[in-house]
Length: 268
Image (cartoon, rainbow, N blue to C red; front, side):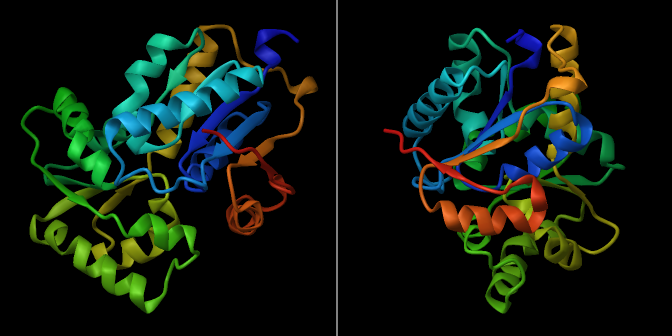
């Protein structure tokens, strides 16, 4: 197989990274994707950096063994803790979600504060603050860890009364800081977008890094001559480390017929 016709590997702690997959499918329709969701070990947010790096190494080793031509780390916590290590250790391009999300946030803000919500691990890493300040040193940034959002999304509780109450509690400081742009700093959070948008109001722009990450993936593939040609794309593959049936049910809610079956592979 020519390198350009090899699949793109994408991974996340669970199903949230499918938001990135959906955008890659839209922007790069000729590409084949192998997605790994680490549903046995979700969530990554409360785990220590070394543990996240170990999980990320195991998953990228699996994806490399499947012959991928690039890896997209569709997990903000793994990007924050492991991206540099993965880029140093792998001979193929590795793309994270933090810097593309930061670029979109700076572009979307109109002088107010930029808010960032994410897992405990992502927020504690300071990755978004560094990336945003590298682009706009004077901008005000408000951050908030929202650790309950990932399990709520994995459970499919996207708009229950409990989810609404928790979201109001988490987002109150963002409202108080008068943010005009809110970065959804976890790939699970876009599944809560309608609810978060209701709470923040129509004047606040919600930044989902998936669109910018897919565009970054396209730029990198083009620069390396790795863009696939239409006539030879194979089927997308979806792999979970546990609970494949639940993954399939949730995945079909926002990928539709693109996901028909889920393989199970246990790592670690």
